[in-house]
Image (cartoon, rainbow, N blue to C red):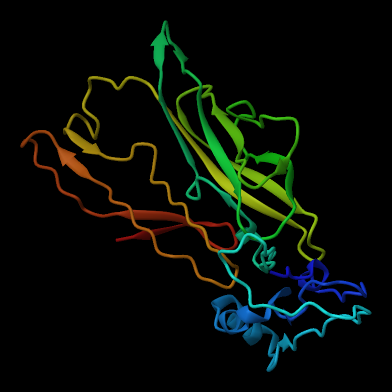
Length: 298
């Protein structure tokens, strides 16, 4: 079997006269990738291709097959159809226009750290907890590394509550060798804590979108042993779930795609029949686009 020319697959023009590799390659400019002509029908029907064509307004985005380079061989090798089961054929994976298609990063919904501490002589103590983010390279052609890993803390979050470490001496991501990022949470006191972990990737095979960022939200909650007094108003025996608040975390693949809806349930319980307690209303506090605190009451 004759392999495909790597220069043609990369979108270039093969100038090697005696090159005996196959050159029946199609080039899709909106998607920025080249592929064997046998995959033309499959590519044209793909969702990403149709979306890129609609955005660019192109009517005929796929370039015709490249002719083989001139050769002085007296008896050129006949071209044979590729076989997926044959190990003799080397077909590179087409380059995907979607940056996130090159790598998978675990914990898409963020990382939750929940710890219960102890208190002695009025001094709270909390043990550190650790979670690991896994980074794996996909089948998409790329040369990936993550030279920058940074923590973004909102105002009021102690700098020492979240720490990050990356095992290994290099930041390169190799196929079949997952990389790890260890995230530790050490609560300085009881309460809730937030931060964002940003992983900056670099792909040497790209020019226009070489650098891209993957973010993961970090959420920490530290509690002390609860008091024996009933939770609620003046010993009424009312308990409400989610003492530290409700956490909503949403992601979207592209800026032009709307966020999906997410709902959480707040549970209210009463431990005794007396006194009689009723729910009179619910207030919703939120910040407007100008940053002003507003209240909705239902």
